[in-house]
Image (tube, rainbow, N blue to C red):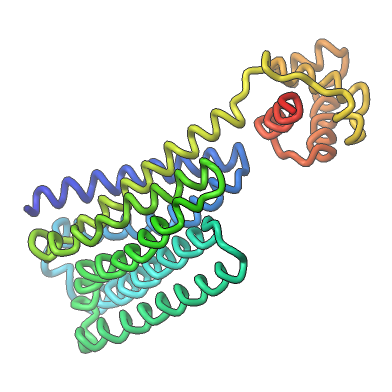
Length: 312
């Protein structure tokens, strides 16, 4: 089972890491509220899984003589605290993300947030107390307890989020909200079944089946945001109709409108400069002014804005 656990731990960590990187790239291009919300969950999860993977191999790479002494004890203390706070951050961000997603009143969301934050804070305090109490100041033992049991225990709180998402799924306002709530319920409700399996097969291994649930959720999020990105932002220029009245309402000049038309055609700054007999720096200045007037930060967002108005 240790070989299977190693393979699954490496596979799930690689998957979460790669998808986190892809989401960061999509967010840089689109500055989308969905990718921003997903990253608040993905980043602490990715860091936690990478930390677990690193720790699981340290004991195999270094000999027993190197895994002792003050330096290693200090490392154990740092690992314990960082891991506990990363897991707590993940639970907190995931709870906030779900509360923002729910089709509920603001008062209900605020109440839900307070209850979940109280539960998570209690989990943090109990985690610190039991790990420190159980280890009796032995930070290497504390690190091992944290590695094998803490994230595993904390993930059970996700079952609450899965039940909440399932309850509100039929009340979803719109297809996107329904899909996200369904994804949360599908991926976290099975933790009820994986919990006893982890106790039987992976009790003494860093990998836990809970990581599979998080990996499924991450893959689900990636397909959701990638589909949304290509639908809303990667728009073929042939489909974009530039509305002059829309540009005029934002104070776009005639020259700036010309440059927008060239941008929509996929022209580079140099090609636009050549076509308009102006310098490349002048083109860059015009583009900067266009972005400022329309409230966008790059071409992807510009094309998305133009496409929205052309559809209307």
